[in-house]
Image (cartoon, rainbow, N blue to C red; front, side):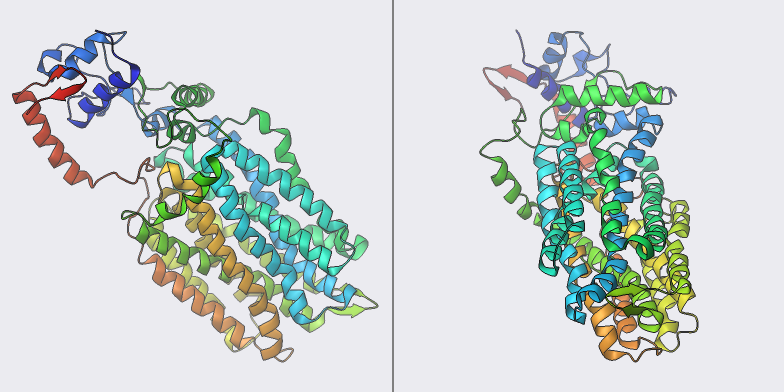
Length: 558
């Protein structure tokens, strides 16, 4: 009797579920064989009839299987992940430059074109509005068509729109192109999710926080570039230079592999195996023996662009509110909103405080004093110590580290309620801790969702973060000007940002499941482990007591 590959996979999966598997050597070669490996060679007679028959009919007489997570653990953290980090890091570097650009662009353009306070705020807010649409669109696209497609699309679109905005002839055209830049930037987190999907669970938190160095370097680099370019060539040259890092991504696109988790989830098992083998070979390790066991959440064969892809994208949203995900979704959205509003608010408020006290607009040309550039640059260095979080994220865990970072940010900003004397230090620390919270939120979000909806969920969460970003310029610029006399503490604006940090800490305390060191979910229908083990134990006992026979097309048994 011949059986299809699907039937063999069913047999292997069934045997795995019922605990009829011994352990296999892991990636370190220590002789342990975790469940899900190979059926016992000498005891097939102990197995239910259907599983025993299927095993004997397989090509090698031995049913072996390993999961994506087991394969990544065996392949280990090595050269492959570090090289991919360089690629993803350049996307992060470019994203940071585009976002830090906003704090310098607004006063320059406002001075040249004689804009009102509200018009100036829209130059920043329109980018965040665009990111709301881009996060949804590119996140969905990458879950349907692949992470590589999502990364290429966002890099190409953003760089073109960035260069176009540098040539904008008037205020309205500039808003249009900056909004489209925001649409492209909304897809950048797809690259972050891809890196998360190929990193072993044991190292994932620390590794992804280390990757954030590229964001910090981009932010610091932009402050230095602005200090050099703006007085000499103006804001248009700064816009053009800021678009260059994302162009870099396009040249290396052909050699970047697709995420094996996406391939497996979309039914492309052989392609997923090839990528996993490439990871192991690059790292100088080996995959477990056997073959990859997958659960394709989509059609058996990925069909790319077809009449159903748009419906697939639209149909993703209700999945975020499935019984097992709805509480996670609400917490994640709150974390993103609080992080983005606080982070971008502190950045914009830093520039606004200096522009309001010593900046000068003369004949349509805005100039900062040298002391202002140096202070802004020092505050941007608050991005760098955030890597101390990398030492804690896998030790303390995501939940309580988030609570601590939000509360620390609130305390750091509190002196600004009363005095500007320590403004540089307060803004430095406030930026450090709120960015730390933002980074941990980035790490936690892809871990909190299963593969088939992961980048979509990250994109929608990013969208809620950008809603906070839309509000940040109006608070840090418009509200600050209307409620603060030049040279006095920005009490109202700072109070709002402190309140948002408190809200973030409360939301973090509501995280339903700690993800530090845990395997990424492949499906949201996974049951609680203790319940599943109890169920499987009973099933195993019944199967061993009364073997199952195959009759016709179905299974008949107890």
